[in-house]
Image 1: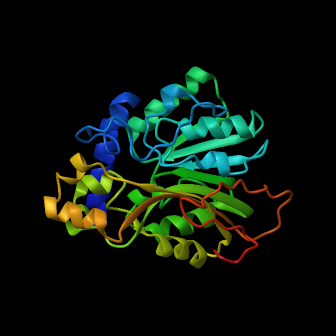
Image 2 (image 1 turned 90 degrees about the vertical axis):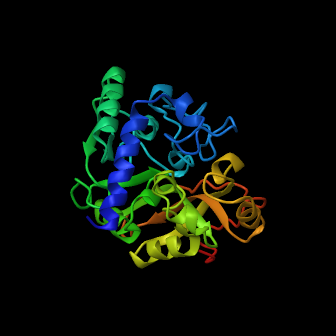
Length: 296
């Protein structure tokens, strides 16, 4: 078995366990089904409270952003959520697209698909469906989606360029995506980079921020825009599982940064009424740019 398949199997096994847990259990750990941190918060997740369409039962606390908030979803859109979990972002997207639209969630963990389908049935959402499959080989026809969203999932896939090419294939001409993910500036210590649990925990699978953005441009997307950025700090009681005291100090004082970013990009093609991008003030978190500024 090759390394990529081993990583996929590790992630699938871990997220099958998470599907059996509640949000409170997941929120007490680094990024899900791991040894709980003594910091009583989840180091990745953003707060969905007050978001239209939010379903608490479908929120397992596993995201690292609010991509649907920035995605410019319109009534009647077809939206695909990559790594849909228990369905949280799909239900938020459905609130935006309305009953006249369609939302498709894709996840490769059967337990997550089962949980999401139960949640959708309880809500009576006939225009929200969940398909089992890998996001680097989506079970979706070419040119199917107006909008694609994803929340802290691409970092879990070994072949990031392949996923981004799939996103390009599945979007309609003129369609766009808004994706929240974890990226790096600088190199992780080897002990973190090589650990399977840290990979499944949204950290070791992250790639360099500039490389991530370049993969998007190389796939043919335009107007690549950084909509939001926030730093991620790993609590000491998580780090001490992997690093000595000296290595922890060096890591925290070094140049390595772990960030959650939300990225927007468009597939070239004719489209009516492109959404006005929602931006945030990132002066204290990192640089922000618009499609017209040329900085992305």
